[in-house]
Length: 454
Image 1 (cartoon, rainbow, N blue to C red):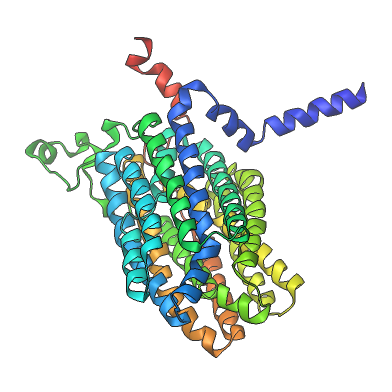
Image 2: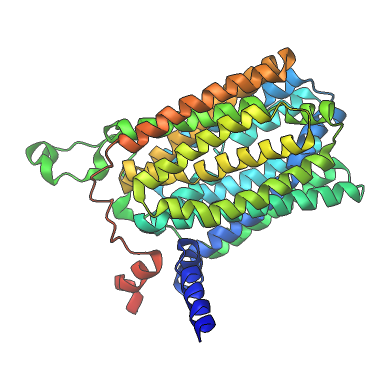
């Protein structure tokens, strides 16, 4: 009897985990559009991940790029993403998420496929610049999710999103490694990856619906009418400017996003060169490392981060603190030329990313209102892109001076991120009416909508 009771208690504990609750909500028929979004992300991320172990070695071996040239390409891609993320995020606040999201997916498919046509540094640079102009699919996906679920459920759904993304990256890397072993040319792998992104786009066209309700949209430019001047209290919040929502907490989130991304980009831009020189590894080993990291990241984002998210702003801020500490510790182990220590460093870096990445959109949603989610999240992605512009160049310069120097610099950056994470914890949350804990899930909104009974 006692064993049965213990088993039932264990089952209840598992089922009450935020991620399991999110899975159950996602499986509801009414949440088909949100479920389709997750499916699209898995398909597109799987295709993109197939290119990760291939792309760097394609640039090194087939195009003959040097570390500095590879850094220039990475920086140029990040610069175009900065522009694209800022513009697309803001446009989505005015025109909705769906069509911008689908446009990003099809743009990704076209640019991945176009990599197979590159033959020199100039071609490669142009393709990567064009690839970044959509701003990426992730920020629009995150905004879509936050539109669809209430504030208290966002950590679980974004943790699930990050977990599926990590699993897709793991599967994609596995497929990429398998194709390499089978002898498929790197250019052909790009074409296979493009097919995955194209399938994701077609599926989204058929199954997704708009997530941002018309009443939550706002014009591109603040519109002030005579009635607004006579009665400013009755003026809609959607007419306010972007920068009226900026506060200390939001700035700290943006700065933390920049610092974390700068640290990662500085250290890992030349990762392929590092493992090739120190361990003699190739793109096969690169893919195995990525699969290893994907499993850990998926587990952490599904199991661990949602538990931080249960505690609201302070929980997500605490996740950022732990993330910064893990990153700083990883820098101390990373330069050691021993495989075991290298794997330990990779694990610590994965812990850092797995706790930080889903926390950023959650914290953005806490510090801004629903009508400004696209703007706030778009600037956060732009901060990541700005760091990705400076990081590769910095990493390329420091890499030629010595790995120890890079690691000490990056360790210092993580410590600065730790200070901004403390600032996030101390900053007051937004008191906007959009931030209601009782806000229903997408399925509940559909049940209560006027058209639900027709």
